Image (cartoon, rainbow over all chains, first blue to last red; front, side):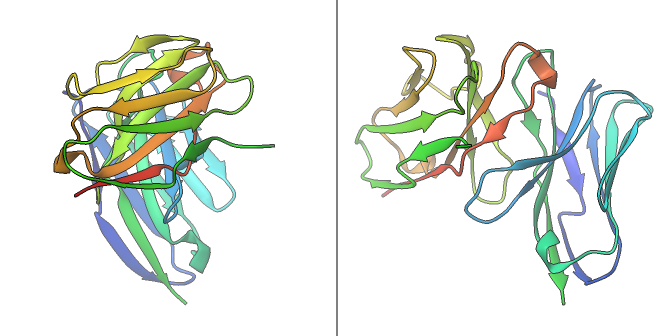
Length: 111
Length: 116
């Protein structure tokens, strides 16, 4: 079945540094979503992308929908301690509500 | 306003027992989803309701798993004859409904199920 592969698996960075992570798929997605999950909580939607080539920002977060529709990137600028968490990419394999998630990128920020 | 709530937050049971996990979606949301998240993995889709009916149950791993949403609001995920491999966090999400893959899903905090 369809899978989403995220890299890196984990990152440990200094506060203030920029972060970049990506997500690739073996098949085309028409929507790309980026979620963040804190310990003991459910995932929270950060950014949604609906068009190939689209670049969307949400504060210090910027995400891009790859031209091939098989990848997406998430960048976080000037990281702060509250950015700590697990970041997931996700997408619907068809025009239904079902979402497929990547395995996540764990971000740790050193003050 | 209230978000998605799930009860219990933690459930410990013995192998072979029956468990029920409850989800209260955001008021007015017609779509409801169940996912399962194992340690170190992303959520894995189980079942999706639009109203009272299961629109897609392709993610249910076997016939020990069953979910209902009789009045189109609260949903219950039922697991019979639990196995140790069923241990995971069970997440529920709801969305306004009607927009298919572009409908934003709002997740609850999950129920952590441990099967001894």
